[in-house]
Length: 456
Picture 1: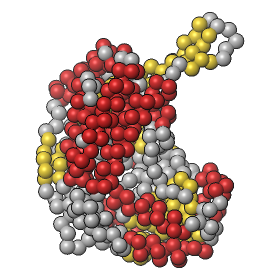
Picture 2 (picture 1 turned 30 degrees about the horizontal axis):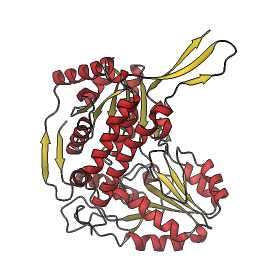
Picture 3 (picture 1 turned 90 degrees about the horizontal axis):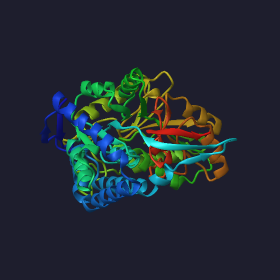
Picture 4 (picture 1 turned 120 degrees about the vertical axis):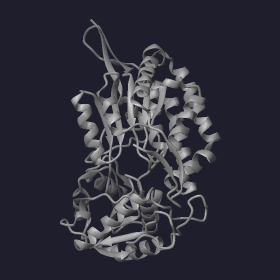
């Protein structure tokens, strides 16, 4: 697998990286295994906390440089890159502050003797991570697991190698032992070999459904725990009593943040008939104001997609949707006159259940618009999806919002807000969006042994 850093704004190749050979990979794995067994698992929470706090401080100190790498490698707007760095540092701090309490021994009531459940680390963990949030994705995997006493090996996406190296350097500069965090430039075959290896105790993947199915099957064959954070096609429901200005603000941010390249992006806009025309008119007006350009330029509001291949995929999806009866209300084409992988903000409508777009995830600035009769129809349509990651409901009646949220089959629902991430909020989905949770207390309990110690 080629690890190539390419600027999606202009197509310029920035740097190439050699893959790790099989022999070197075995050395790295053994070093990680030894680090866990002879050192890291036995460190105190205070020792781990000191390292994690220093990593967070270094991340904030290096924010300009770290953010620029994100914008250069995958095209994120510089303001959003800086926001990702800040969120990632907050995740490091969060687990430094709360891991010990999350993992404190739990005394169980029992009729005789004593019973305590203790949380013990598993060992070497493998993380397979995507490109769309190069620091945030690995922070939410690495921070809780390092604080729990595990060691981690990370196979990052092949188009963000400089970000991958920068995060590894940050952790080591903060005082983490070299083998406690290992960045790996490896192939998919080598990933499979690591999952097979008994020294690797569990695997976490954030990525596509296809990759998730492969990793889950491989882990299951080896009777190993896995967590999967996969795709989404989040519903954005606007009821007739919604605050329209608030709904529009979040609709634009929810669809266009990170150029629409987020699993929790708002993708299916389901609007009750009574307000559908007003919403759609203002939504299109807002989308038409986006300005494409260099993501490092603060005046740019429309970033390129992560690669030319990503743009080609999105254009094919739009063409296929139209061929099956969908109507393009705006956009639908690549941005003309720029060399980068730019997609026009796009709105598709008239999408029925027979259209392939009905069940697909659109990973870019393409919104699917649906009109529905009422609340019940909105919930039914929201749930008629293979995905179950997140969703949003807009209403001024909060009790009504909670009722609708409970009826939506997802791992997360946001009332009067587009999807958002924070260290203290559990992140994860159901159905084809995967299983397991990251962040919050739930994230640190995925890869520990909840061991019962009973004294009779």
